[in-house]
Length: 315
Image (cartoon, rainbow, N blue to C red; front, side):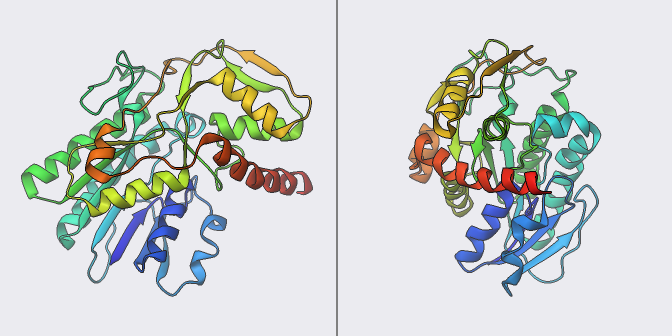
C-alpha cells in the first residue's frame, strides 16, 4: 500500500505513520509543521518507505505515481491553536479536505477523514451517538474548528455520493499519549506539565464538566480497522470511560505526586459540559473497543512528559 497522511508529523498523525509503516505501507507524510514537529517523525525518516513532504494542504498537492490511501489528519485540533489561527483552521478543514478528496478521486484511492467529537458541540444528548446532529454555535469562538469539521464531513459524503470516492469518517474523542506538546493547551498536557513543575493545576469552571480519554494506541488500532472496512458513515472512536475534569486533576496529582493544588478559572465560551462516546457502532462494525485503561495509559504518558519537562527546564 502507498498511503498519504496529511498532518503526519502531528500527535496522532505520527503514531498513524508509524503503525502503517509497521504493516508494510509506503508512507508519504504531508505537514506544514504549524503544530506538527519533525522530532515526532525523526525515527521514521530513517525508513526507506517513509517520505516527508513539507506542504500546506490548504493548497493543492500533486503526488507522482499510484496512491492507495489518503488520510486527512491535518488540523489545528487544540483550542489554544485554533483560537490563535482560526482562518488557517477553517482553510485546512474546507480547502484541505477538498484538496485531499480531489487527490483520492484522481488516484482512485481510499479516503479517510479525521473528524472530531466537536461536531456534537455542547451536546444535549448523552452519550453522543453518530446519529446525533449536534448543538454547535457556528459563530462562537470555537466555530472555526467545529464547523470546519462539520463541513469536512459534508464534502466527504458529497464526494462519496457524487464521485463514488471510497470515503470513511472517524469522529475522534479526547485522545492522549506520547508526542503531545507541552504547550498543547488541552487538559492532559496542561495538568501533567503543571504537576511536574509544581504549579497549580488550572481547572476551568467548577470542574464538573466531563471528558472521556482514549490512549493513542487504541485509537490508531481503530483507525486502521476503519480504513480496512467498507464503512462510509461516521464512526465514533474513543474510550467511553467518563470522568469529571476535577476528578481527572486529582488522578494526575496522585500519579505525579508533589504538592500542587487546584486553581479554578472561568469556564471558556461554549466549552462542552459533557463528552462521552457511544461506541456500539465501532464494536459491531470494526470489532473494536479500547484495551488500555486510563491508569495504564497515564503511566505510559507520564514517562514521556517527565522527559519533556526535563528537556524544557534545561533549554
